[in-house]
Image (cartoon, rainbow over all chains, first blue to last red; front, side, top):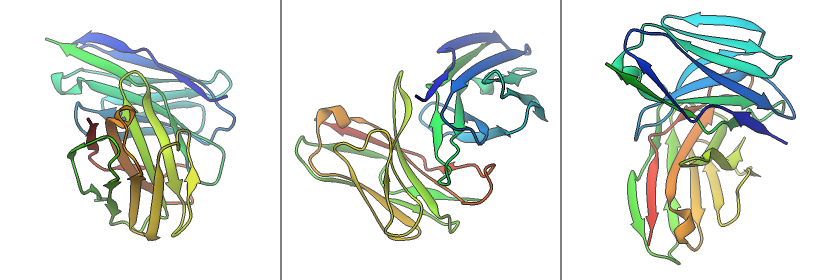
Length: 111
Length: 114
């Protein structure tokens, strides 16, 4: 079956670093995405990993270990505007680019 | 910038009504998707289409149908709305080819069935 697990909620302090974990078990794998979604808005693309290792993009980094079925999103120098849901999604191995989403992690950044 | 436009942001419909949710994308993407998003359940795929007049069932197609008569437009149809279809509906599109091609979402349609 298809299963993607993320923590439901996390809290962190402004200026700190937070790591959001994602584990997955899917029938196929063709990459892993992270999206950010503010309340009442559409998800927006943050990062994509298909090979093992760390991808860095400004304050955000994403890591993938395919053998462990594991990824994390690392947010540095947290800002209040980073309060949002973070969605982990796996692209299955088919030709249609279908994404399977986790339930998302709601991050609250406190002053 | 890619633009995925959902025509209705907020709708209130009665049980048994037929509901149309329209979605248009302006990037000539082959793939289009309809998801619904519910608290604690995340995004679940209802239907997707990889070409005009082509459609595939997603994970929760029951109670829904879709139409793709033109490449840029993908419509979600609730033949007879029920209260358990109250949800936020997200349309999305993507280019075929590279696995790294992300999908782009519309702003969402909040549907309440009373």
